[in-house]
Amino acid sequence: MFQYLVLLKTDRQKDFFTKIYKEYKNSMFYTSYNIVHDSSDAEDIVHGTFLTLIKHVDKLIDNEPHKVWHYIDTTVKNKSFNLLKRRKIQEDPGLDEEWMQGEVLEKGPDTLMEEFELQEAMTGLLKRLKRPYQQVLALQYYHELSVQEIAEEMETTPDNVRHISMRAKKKLQSILEENGLWNEKDDKDK
Image (cartoon, rainbow, N blue to C red; front, side, top):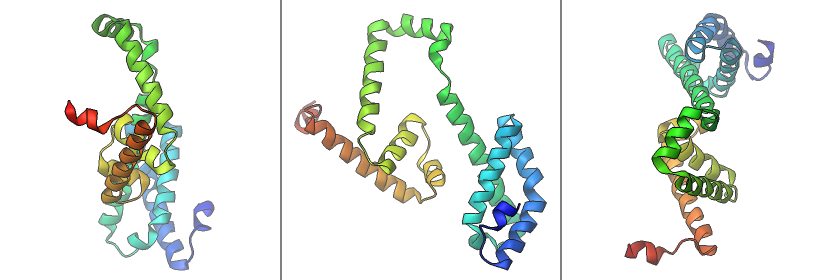
């Protein structure tokens, strides 16, 4: 707990944090463990949640206890579900023979290869964007998170996420145009 207290500025913040730490740490772990089913991951999520609470301690300190718990519970659940989403994405479906056979039979090897090449090309293009643009587009299209989920993950507002996404798409379009891969006129004619 000392590692958290050194991050806080006032005695009032430290007293508040000590109280919520003692009161909620076991419930936080239990909530996370019931979602991720791994004690090490649940501990990491609890730790991450406490760091988030430190960032927002001034907003929480004067709230009713049930509102504080609701915020903590929501944060723990979001972090736990985000971990599950990241795990799901990291699983390599190529190792599942049934999946691969079904995909090859359904789409054919040429189509699968074209999709793979397109995905590789898009990954290369995304790497040319600034970090917030990369992050928003990856969370939006690759991880399939909602604008609200992205805002929570990035600790910003949904409106800001929408603006970053719009600017990122425009920047990506201009990169495609510069490389002769996109012609807005041709796209409108279709």
